Image: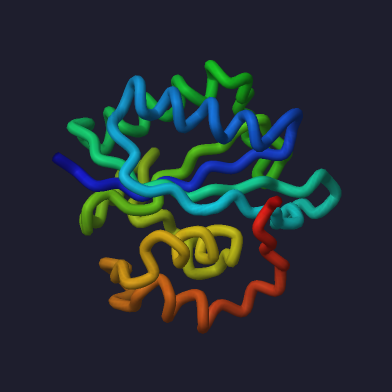
Length: 161
């Protein structure tokens, strides 16, 4: 069994509902959720001229290999209305990123694990810290909590009520 850490996010439509639907589909098609963070609301990152994002981190167990996990995630995003473009940091119904896969380091053309920008983004670190603050980044050799304390990202991340 493999332990994976995912970040879910979205800012089109009922984003809180999309997060719930995404988790239900992940549990149906990929594996059991072990832990979920609170839902957090954050200003858009990169392209700031769009609605706020709702984000949630989850830990799950899966039998999926990394590339199979990615393929299943892309199918779930499509089922939930995600249309992929080459534009970065655009609004979306749902986005599911693989942050960590066990403690493996994977460097393929279409799959980089750990996600290469974890340490730069509070909207990733805050929910991850809530559920896995002591997890050690396999490349940076620092805990999520340490990375959050060192992060210079100024975006405000608030628990959504």
